[in-house]
Amino acid sequence: MRIISLDLQNIKSYHDSTQIQFTSGLNAVCGLNGSGKTTVLEAIGYALFDFLPYNRQAFIREGEKTGTIRLRFLAEDDREYEIVRKIGSGPQYYVVDLETEIKLADRAPDVLAWVQTYALGIDAQTDMEALFKNAVGVPQGLMTSDFLGAPGTRKSIFDPLLRVEEYRRAFEELRETMTYLREQSSRAEVEIARLESETDRIPAVQENVDQYGAQVRAGTGRIESLTASLTALEARQAALDAVQARLVELDGEYKGAIYDVGRFGDAHRLAQERLES
Image (tube, rainbow, N blue to C red; front, side, top):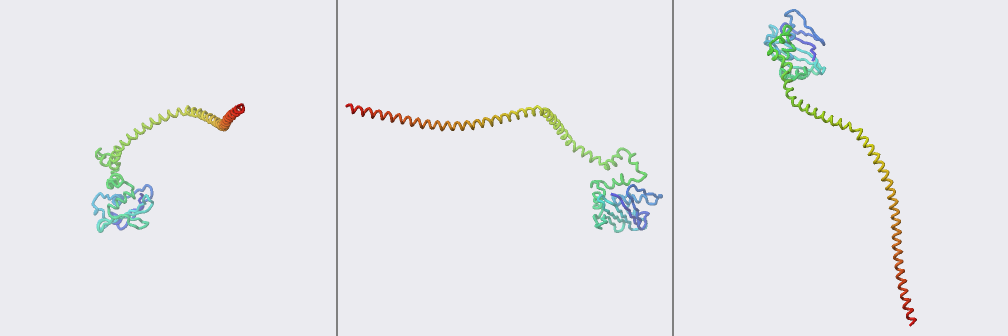
């Protein structure tokens, strides 16, 4: 997100309505001591992060009953939104889409949840107050103080900001996955080695395939030749079968003729014997 403007009305040293414009890139807020530089930072922290380092009533200009913060910004979707926070009498806290003039969230929990998700794009479990106090809105004179603190102090501040515990848990939970991936990787390497050894045999196998192919083609030609010969032999056999059938028929006729000759010979002898007697 990019802050476009901040309008302060009756907030500490700011009277009536004072609008501060911001440009893209780096902005510097300059002024004498007590001119309200820190108030600008505090107003941003209170509007976006719900963080105020002192009592709300002390944030209102002395003698006034209410104070209002209007923060206009450009979100990740390139649309302009405005957060309005009124403190004191009749408090209000909401965010509105300036193009449609639709109020998108009302009351602190909903506004902060919307800011986290749509304006800042951070995890919903993030401690907004700690994020602003220790990272975003650190006062100028305290920029390096946290780094100079005791180890325990640094840990309590920076571990949540850097989400050290979440990364630690993620690492622990991923150990089993890492072990599994290592095992799978080892198996894959063994399989790759086996396949590479098989690949080395491809030329010899290809040579055998070529030889067998030549043999198959030769055998196919031989089969075709034998098939043609078989067809011719089958035709010859059919002709011989017909001749054999005719021979059987003639043999039967021959035997019938022999029988008739014998029968006629016997009749001739009987007739001759009768004539002689």
